[in-house]
Amino acid sequence: MSERPETPQSPGPAGPGARTEAARAAELDAAGPLTATRERFVLDDDTVYLDGNSLGALPRSVPGRIAEVIGREWGELRIRSWTEAGWWTAPERIGEKIAPLLGAAPGQVVVGDSTSVNVFKAVTGAIRMAGKGTTEILVDATTFPTDGYVARSAARMAGLAVRPVEPARIADEVTERTALALVNHVDYRTGELNDMASITAALHTAGALAVWDLCHSAGALPVALDACGADLAVGCTYKYLNGGPGAPAYLYIRRSLQERFESPLPGWNSHSDPFGMAPGYTPADGILRGRVGTPDILSMLALEAALEAWEGVAIEEVRAKSLALTDFFLACVAAYVPAGRVRSVTPADHRRRGSQVSLACPGAGEVMAELIRRGVVGDYRPPDVLRFGFTPLYTSFADAERAAWVLGEVLRDRAADPGPAADPAAADPGVPGGGAG
Image (cartoon, rainbow, N blue to C red; front, side, top):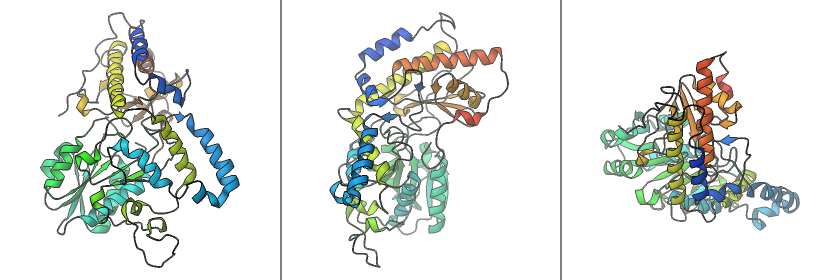
């Protein structure tokens, strides 16, 4: 069982009227190596944005690039842009830009389709590569629901059973009958980080494949797909990679498996001769066989421009700031929030923590709705979890301090005058669907 932070017990020695952590926040922001990257994003001083684990902020590099794509490439070059502007090669070109953030060598990541579609491709592809005699797949029991829906559909088509298993129990539960396990690297509700290396090793020892969902980890902390021996992985790009609403997802296929990977969605874009228009399908070599249909160029190129925000940034610095931000936020919650009103469900152990803090709080939907009205944007997950996502490229320590302060104010005001219940649906600006998390 992971260690959990202590429930905040008091509003601090200076009392509920004192912003005791504000000066410390200013010191941390002044000393931080990633403070300047905040200027790469469109933000406003009136809002604390802590929902980058659902939708990342807009990078300043995107609007001008999209205007160029629409005005020049689509408006003037038109069909010529598939070759002259590089539209045709965008899926693998952008995959190469994402690969270092995944700990993946070149030639193993392709961008396109939604997270849900890529989960289907990865799970079905893994089932087809599994050894004879497999009868089941394991699915992370805490997974984002869409992953479970898709996995069950893929398993049903293959005649396999699905067994939900807690990630920490996979090593004990996997058997020689297991084809694969689909596991979230970071739990979308609690922010708990699962051990990719040990889980993957346990699966391989039993002869099973490891398929990872990176939606809540890539761009927030180091991911080591190659080093851990992961087989396949998927992830969205609209969270910590800031690709924009509905930005295309990505698919990782380990190089040694690529020639065995058989896509359940063979499209003309993954054909070895896409313009040959042959009635029979022959897959392209390498990672290109992860493509399906025509790339969604506008959102694809918005993502490519968004990735410019990562120039000169080391993922190790991102991880260090993420942990410092979440530690500081928990300290501020302990200082500002009335005793007993919230309880952290996010691991205290840095080795087990992603880049969000989730607080169990009665009436979480109403509390988050009020936080948003007061300029602090996070989200909540039923029945009682407040989620605060920390994106180190643009989240400041001042943001963390202000969010905790306003949370304390909201909970004190609710204790004094509960008032009518707010509409909890108003508290969740996240987009539902595959990988929205």
